[in-house]
Image (cartoon, rainbow over all chains, first blue to last red; front, side, top):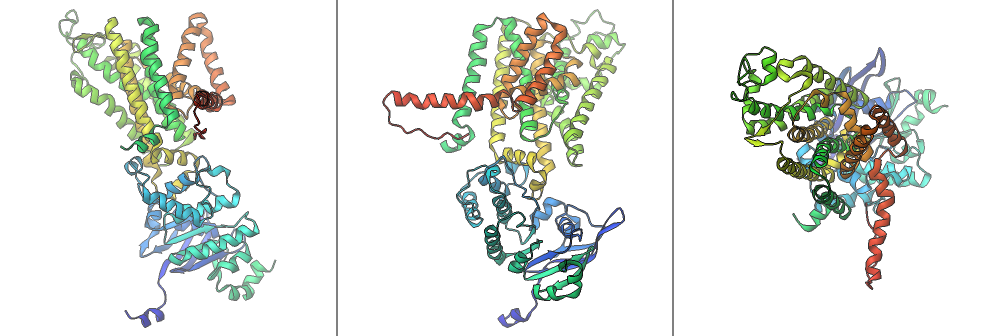
Length: 254
Length: 379
């Protein structure tokens, strides 16, 4: 394959969602949704409350089972896998509220997320060798917590907890990183740092973000998908989406 | 293993705690107690195995089992079956209508030994069964519950129900199990009379060695990544699952380990006390064992042993004078512990006694003219 061809060829899809539907007692939270994420893309999903944004992430990571439709990640059908298997093929998920282990230190939080010794015997005989220590240090510096390695995670500020959880995902080196409202509750300066962080980490992976903060979305998004009542309302660059009359009517207008 | 490896496995504070506990159990108790009291302590220490298992399972992993008596009982019954068969040799049971089978079977008109009793003629099979039967049973319960994500209160209730069912089964099948009286009148182990004073001394020390082996095993688990994963699971099960771990397998593992510890305790109970009965299997003993663990401190493996000894010592003192009040005192103790200091005596020690001790230890070299700068102690 020549260099010229590589440029012209459209990028491969890391994640493709086709005809995805989930219904809770007849209510279709996600309704015949299709969504394609390219390699190294930062895709942001926005939409009014109840549009099904978090449900989409839940479906991808296996927390919720789809009623119908397919989720394909690098050629594998994720709907057939269990949660931990989905993680092992390379999908990482950050939850809406910082979900970290408060009784453990920052170091231990990151170490547990290090992708080695993931079965019972592996965990029992896991050794904290140089590779682990270096990787934890590297990630800790990346998420601005290099000085906090030995402090219990419960002592971190809200923003730092969010970063720690992002770090716990980064150490797994996922090809698709899903973040549910990563800047919720963060200060202005923390938001800027987080946007920088996301730009830096997206070099090797695709990122799928659910976010409400429009300024932040403009800062990071390559493309934006607007969800409404479980369906795609509009998709494209932030510019295009912002000027779409349908989007203005249901979401941005008020 | 390197020195630093050992240090991580056994930090200074834990090493001291272990040595002090060893000194109390192996030196102080045998020196100052007569054989009757020492045998009682030995009996209490068999419960400490259960409490230790609960520290791993409940304290670290957050899995509260109210049915650990099941495994204590299974271990104890396996051992009792072997001893009973040895005590039921044809010469000893010549007056029965069917000589050579345990007396209670004869009373229940059984004329031959049931098939599942046969292998218990062998000591090696018995020792294997003491470990394997409870581990297998715990594995089955664990797979059935944890793979379906049954946890918390529901798991506690189900284990309690199983404890109740097992008790009813043992009592109901008295021809096979000795019924409500249990398996009694145990005498010898390979011809060695376990009822003599010297035998009881030896069994006390064997029990102590096994307890410290289990303590070390628990320490290895606690200090491994698996131990930290258990804590992580207790706090954020979903986060662990979405970090690529099959959470159920870890729960099954720790539940099986707790079961094996309990079973070793049960087998040593049978050997030291000389019988096994359903009253150590059911709901009440299972909950009592949780209380031992809670009083001592459910996060501390050493606390669990002290808690067991203290509560049982109090029980003996109290029930000698006011037998009918003991259960109320025990209930009050449990409520008091949970309300006032949820992490038990070990937590009180760590928050108050240990900082003071560390200060004294640091002051010592200073007084001797040393120039060592005080180090910050972790943990």
